[in-house]
Amino acid sequence: MSGFENVPAWAALPIALLLILGGSIILIGALGLMRLPSFYQRIHGPAITISLGTGCLLLASMLYFTILQSRPVIHEIIISVFILMTAPVVSMLLMRAAVYRNLRIGKHEADVDADEVYSYPEEK
Figure 1 (cartoon, rainbow, N blue to C red):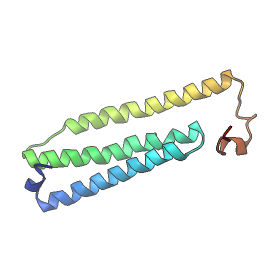
Figure 2 (figure 1 turned 90 degrees about the vertical axis):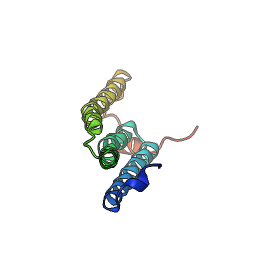
Figure 3 (figure 1 turned 30 degrees about the horizontal axis):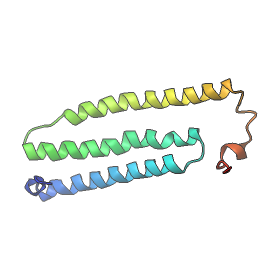
Figure 4 (figure 1 turned 120 degrees about the horizontal axis):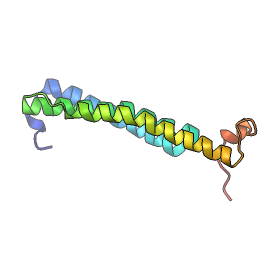
């Protein structure tokens, strides 16, 4: 980074910690998206990642540019509000579409065995 040497050490530590924390949370969410077997379990990884991981990254960005420019930078707050307002709605719409699809094809929760829901699909 070309301007990171101008950031004091007292500010570089929280920025680095927030970046590491946010990146770790996003990585865990991506692994959950890849690893969990059913759609209903898989939707939780990105939902949590969007709210907490993105919040850490945006807070680190806001802190970095506020210190670098010596003035408050609030663009990230607007981005955070937009993400926090839209992410739950998108997750809810995706889950409702999946439930509706399952009901259309006749796959009800009572008909599905717990082992079938929480097991990995068999390869053909």
